[in-house]
Image 1: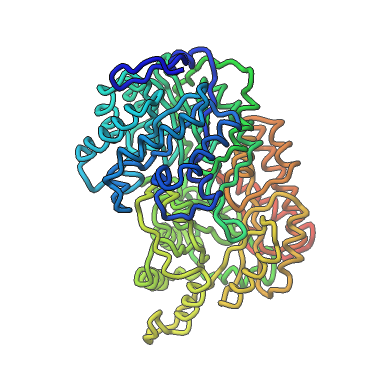
Image 2 (image 1 turned 90 degrees about the vertical axis):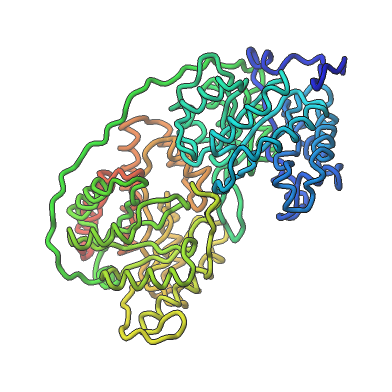
Length: 631
């Protein structure tokens, strides 16, 4: 099929990728590293160098994606730049690796699939320390090697910062007329790490010379879809999407991505509805995911892009009413004598504390016994829960219950933090491991993890004995009430219970569970935990929409919805969906209050009005059952 070389462009009989996408959908491949790891390659080696040392294995991965239906194969060169290869002492092999990688992908493409030379971000999630101009030579070196080897185009992918991607385009665009696919990776829906809205970013990429513009990595299908639903894409822009297989999390002791192949097939149809024409997969995706997408999109034509209306959002304000400060027993004391409600309300991700405190006051007035604040959940930066807890307690007499993650502080910081909580009179905490930093919005940050959650529980109890982490006397005894987390949504409940029992042995005073979404699971949790001897607060989180339900079920580690709940949420939209979500939660609470005196309500998206309604419902149901209710 090869006709001739023109400079560094390889001309083939295939239609130019840009022309092809005008009238066709195209399925891309999935994750290279995920497949290599599944085939036995350990973490910590250079996956790109395998093009030289084990070309058969790399070819096998390409072929598996081709057989699954992918008709755009990316070369195994994402980190084949001088900076990344220098970590393995292979910086002198940039050209050899890139040229061999093209050869392997070209062979697997069998003449009818496009081969795109992959060029990844050199920053690769790290906090910027170098001047970006220092990367110019590296982009040029890698691009020239890929172009001379005969790719059909280049894919610049997983760029967290628009400014770095624009620099790469500036260097590479003059080298070739071939198609440039440019893909940003965002840490949150709608905005790049360096502060640009996707609307602005897409416009700048188009102006800079990008032929195909899109998103890949970091987010799963639901959040990638939400991103496209809110962006004003340039007119006639060709769009691409390569989502991760949901969120990476630990289940049954192993890190894994959650999204199934079936879910990916359904998601591909939704991405098509957004006018996206090139659809593939990123981290965690496999040939099974690609096959599901290819099957779903088979024989379908692309849809024209319709940008959303630009409607500025407004946040309603709620008046703050001060409440009387008074001494209250701990939640453990309360739950032993009657129904007790803990409500989770996430700290803000911006500098506006007033709206958060307004919500806290409404939850408190509704009857929450304690309001629990996460500690930068999902490794995403939020306002200090210590500062907010102090404000809640001192201004409004609201009992805070603070999460304490092992991730962000070393042992020096952990003890200092706990000593500060003691000084503020904040003594109710929940010790958790915390999600790794690399999965949050500052992936270049270090995850500390000096100790496990078991160790930290024991060490907090040591402070209660008046002894520091180092064994030094502290003149006073702390009085921390220490909670531990429990995820019942696992395949092997016995193993999860064994882990929970270790937390109790370490000194946990109470347990808070992940949300459950069917009555049978509530009964299972009760039977599995009734022997442990400390209070259990069963987690209930109302759903807000069908999209929210599918996202939680398919992409968030530790959460599993019942088929009935998923089906019920599919039938309704808008405000009706929230009402249905509340109704499902109420039905779950009907069962929960019969088995547990501890109720843990999780507020979705800070919609505290949903939580206040459920607090009031718990009060009513407990009264009807003649269960003593705290408040």
